[in-house]
Image (tube, rainbow, N blue to C red; front, side):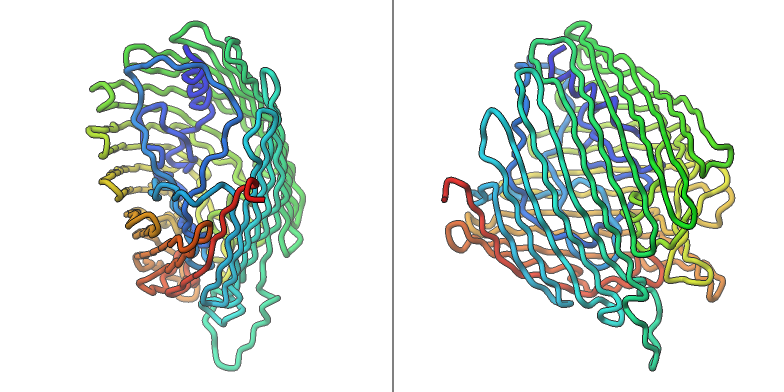
Length: 564
């Protein structure tokens, strides 16, 4: 087995199938499109900007020369386009298209822009030139809206990020490190303004600050049959109401090549966490997995198991011990044209404040945190690449999950959300399909997903959609003009209105977004992003209206250190 196949197998062992849990994973090894919708956590990113991609700067490791194989799984050359759409943070993790990087992008850039709702925007990126000893990257980003869809400054928002990372290359390995700061500000503006009522914006302001760091080592020998890596990731989260969360993930992984067709692998995670709100709780989770990977004549199988132990003072019995299957298989029905795949797995995953605010930043204080237990998850389907310009995939899934989080407005303060769980395990059924096409200078993608949540005790699967559709396209008009568009639809969202004690069917979400980039002089370009073109003040979460039509106009300056 060559090194690339070995690395892919190791990566597959770390990828966790949780249809109900909504865990993202890279599916390229097993014949699946690399942008499959997360099956349980369906969101729409509301606070990002449509951007043209920059060139990859990953050149840290030399790989063995890979022999040609007939069992190569289909891959889609698609990537996400992010967009700023409002103060709400629903996000869909789906395949997305973007144009090829235009020639003027040189890796380093500065961007600045301004939009309605009094929205300044700035972003900068600087990376090292290529060399054989080290690599570093630095990025800074700011976007804010001083006014929002309700009571102007009372629905203002802001996002700020600073990220640094680097690698140092050794003879048979590399050391990496990262450091970053995230700051997110929002307001609990989910109320109906009344004449004469004045609400101080500081009283309903929420600020989350996250300091994060990581470091590790990865072997890069092209001759050794043993590959391994180890490191840590840490973050500390604080908010505007004296809540905090610490999380340290110590991880290690390794694989040993038995032959050109087979290997064994193992991985370990020791997660040491704590959360402080009204009370302090310790949240530790220990996970170990391993197995055997075999590939031959268009057939691949990974057979292993995962073990998890949670020592969490928030749990009723104080601890959890679980064993899960971890079996993946794929087979090329038609060489390089049609691949069938199947998975059987499970996982125990911490639900943290950080993971919850990524879904819904309007959660209240002292929300219940626990461990999401995907007891069993099955997924199967096919992917096809009939021509070089057309890709199709389809899959069905089932998962039995305990402690999947749902969001419910608080009974006596509907501006904030509680996190609720069904007392029993729920069954989740999903159907997904994706189509990608490339015709000359046009790239397009359509994805659809249907989800059914069987909740034995909860009245409804609060604030989780049962259908998500997404259509994306990009077109290069000429050497200077590039256009991106996106349309998405989300429906079937139910909420509980405690003022009337009724279940509310939220309106279907329809959103259309457009971005145009134009290179007007050497290293300078301009961009115009128009989001929510249909100007629908839809609600992803009950009582929280999104921004109407909003636009951002700005300029980009791309440069290289060789320019100076």
